[in-house]
Length: 471
Image 1: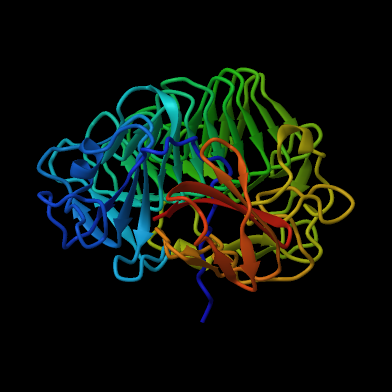
Image 2: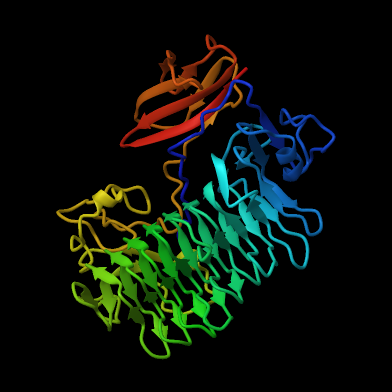
């Protein structure tokens, strides 16, 4: 049986917090009349935790399903970050096994939205499943400037899609699937403008039913999408199955496969001065034409049946010498009931996409979707994955490097679960480095003054950053 794994992205940037910042707790067995300052005195609803918080506070939400009040939207407050995936008994965090579901309740309601299009402080929403949205103007999550949605699953939202950017927000390490829309973008849309960043995401099996709609991703402005898979999205009355762009976005090292449109662009419809680099466009379908380039530039891409200048022409047969040679591709085109997590879009030995890409390190692409360093060989590979010389069952989001530092809050000692630890640095909220002692996997924090600290742990070739409360 194939092992299903998931991607955990540890945030590279944490907000500077004041010593007065508090941690709020939410569980399915809590009460909104509680103080919300510990797991034993947790709130019952996320909305109560948000309303009780001020900028700099953090909210920890335990596993379980949180259904909002009728027609209520969870509004992200400026500077108040939220993290799901906690076990409220042990205090440990595991966003894969401790599913934390935010579910809308109503006939015209959005699940999650930032308070304004532009927040003033970096604010994170991490480790949630966002589902049940029904609103005709953005049904899943709406985010903007200084708002990051990470390690989330946005699925099962209807009427107007999964994620909508109305500012320069970030979507990192997320799965956006099984959403529908009668508007612009069923999966992701930044039609509202802003230079958004979409990285290490899977956008699959979304459906657009509106005239001229796009099923996968709509990009504009100077947005960047990199290391993403766009698969099995379908526009039933529109012209784009995979990606639709205008203005000046960049698409780097993406895999665009099995998308379908009733119009002219099954894979991509790229307008303005869009740049697409090191990307695979394979097994897409449309009524007439799979790739539409209206002023866009395509560089070292691998394209089936309609390769443009500077691209590799791929065979329709995956395992052919000129085929992409994916490890385990789906053969279904368009929206499907297939279990998408079973398919593997990594490259196997002999793929013409290996070592044939352009060096894009200047654009900030130095790793692939799973965090593997790029390039592994002489040149960058084409697509979301860098070939590492072996085949693997890692499919969706990788859990092999999950970072756990516990308990949190802590009084005497912390335990870190990583192997091959090279260094542990601790910083106060003022940025001053704080000396600590570490022995094997145990970190002595008994001497620290009560407060909030940022821990930077280097293990192997990766760096993990998290925040710990000392009490």
